[in-house]
Image (cartoon, rainbow, N blue to C red; front, side, top):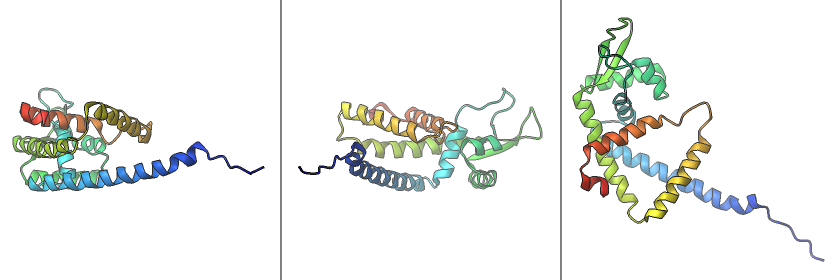
Length: 189
């Protein structure tokens, strides 16, 4: 009688998992490169773009206190305060954000995007969005729905329970901002 070895499910799955991991890494690298190229056309870096997009989200504060405390921006973007200060310094020199003292608590500094900062985020996001949309041209509606579902499950599985994914609300707000700046032809393309 022959000795037959049973192949486990995990052994059967491993080659596919390895291939998927490689493809996700390639997709991520290509996307980051493409994103950086689009931002460079607008003289922005990815950290500057994310910071501006974050600042365009809902601000905690009353009518007399517009903006977000700098330490909250750093926490929200998972950056060290010193790193965030450098990013904000460059954005402020470029006229894309402004810092001011809180009217409610004069010890606190707040930061908010300027009109030019808002315009730039929308323009850069619009350019990037158009490019990304073209990447999905060959996928049908059901394939897109399946891809979305699978990616959502992967993101949930990869996100520690005590931490949100790198601020999903920034990306959601960014896409809302982009869509506000897109015409109907741009959204359907």
